Length: 322
Image (tube, rainbow, N blue to C red; front, side, top):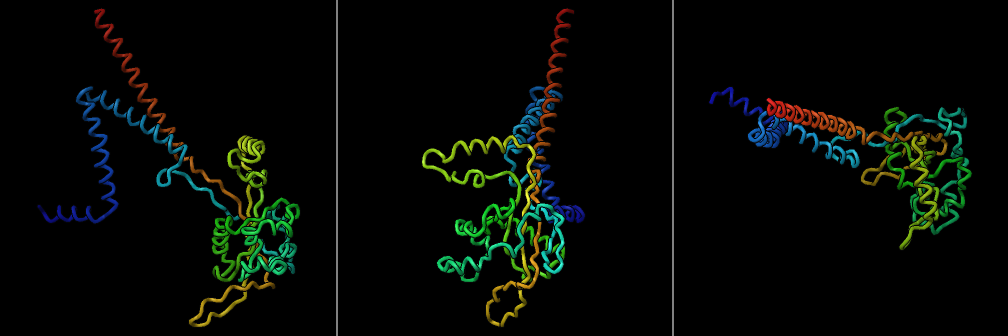
């Protein structure tokens, strides 16, 4: 064996991209080629090719239909739902300016909202669970009934307070938006306050607050059924907004050998609101396109086989008549 040929084989074994291509080619040749070889020896080369292609496209129709109904975790699928930033609004009392997002004007100003420190001061039993302080979103996570006593639903102008446990995705999107805009030097220069949401399709907890499940039959069955019907008939999704409020912290110097100090909010700094809009994505778009392509190929090959059988039958009848 020549040196050049050994070099080629060494390169193939080393490069994982070429190796992956070879694995796919060999797999297609062995699996599909073996089926075609079996059909060709019994039906002929042309008819065997048509039957194998029709069978393959029919199998792909079933597979892509499953992908369309349940998009695979690893495989052909579109973009996942995500939060997209649309505005970074600075609530500066010294220089007030209206936000570009009209829905944000309905949200009360941060100074008009009840302070979480006040709630903790008036309820020492709750303050024991938050030794390092808390925000309204933190209290909404563990004590929603207590927050409702201080923050009425009507006072939010249609916005909803989101618990810290449910705001992870929107807060991560806000961090990325602040970093992309170079608004803060890094994530340690600010602290997240509260998160609010507005719009979107109503959830079960919003429309049917008493529907908390049942031992045998679910609670509020009529409300559940009406909510399901209304959400199904709402073809266009209402715009879903989220606002993540952050505020700069006081610069602190970490002492050698000690844990980093806890961030302390600078009350003199303006509150920065990151406005996000929900992008529903298109997870099922690519599987649907694959399904349409596979179905079209299956119909084409099935029609070719059908017209071939009709032509063969007509020719046989003509041969008998002759």
